[in-house]
Length: 388
Figure 1 (cartoon, helix red, strand yellow):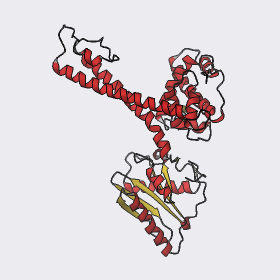
Figure 2 (cartoon, rainbow, N blue to C red):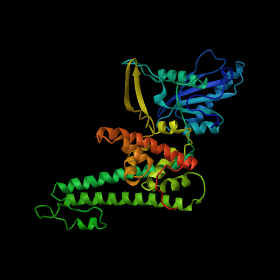
Figure 3 (cartoon, helix red, strand yellow):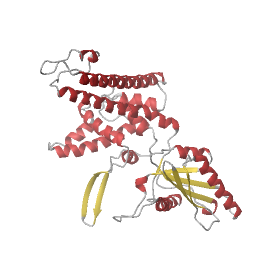
Figure 4 (cartoon, rainbow, N blue to C red):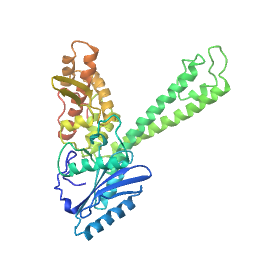
């Protein structure tokens, strides 16, 4: 991607006489493509199969038509909404010399009518207006997502997979406990390695063996639970292997993970999530860090009315959830830090609502402090570190 990239506006001057501007309304099977082509009075609108090479052929055809009309095309800019298709198309187009951008869907202004018309054609018109404003360098039209590389996307997979597996593990444990509770069994320990063998000896509250179908069902649950736990261990062991193999005094994500994990109260899992989800993205300032995590407020002001509607929640939900959990844990492990003292001073009234509000502020301050730690090496005041 071009080095002169700003999510809120384009830093490259728009010369519309030699630029093809294209937006794509994407679905699983079909793409609706709208364009502004210099020299053409009509505004092309073409539906094609969801196929990247076919898109390249269409863009080349429009380039040829513009050349026949006397316009030499020097730039092709394409935009689409960042959604389930991800960023592969943007990387594909950049590799073929075409500018490609992914628009944050929530940043595009839409009509506030109760029953507004919505079709793919109307959506392309909305995207085109927003994209044109962004290309002209005007703010507040839309916001672009940073296009991650394949390596950056791949680095997030282990942590996200582990999060999914932990949820699956919890679901299986709860299902097993629910089945056992129906027979008055509450003392069965699933953490034992021979839990599957102990099913044969377990007795119901009446003193009878478990019914055959129930025992078979529990055996299958335990087999799945054993597999999920083995996969979680495999992910953790592979991460530890990569951290150990990385240079000790190097730069990059592995060095960031080791640095953050030195803070008492933060484990490798949390450090790995924070680094690959937000801290390695190269955000420009502390406001961008807080905004990406969705930890900023959403004020509602009109006339004399002044109120706060709560968290914007427009950023990364994993980071936001992880930081709020980390903030509570931070209070227990870093009692002498300036951040903990700041929190205690503002929650001295003991009200639960005050603590719930201020824990979000603490999570925001802590995230910014961690961002400064990995970018400038500035250790938060009063924070205790593990020995290197």
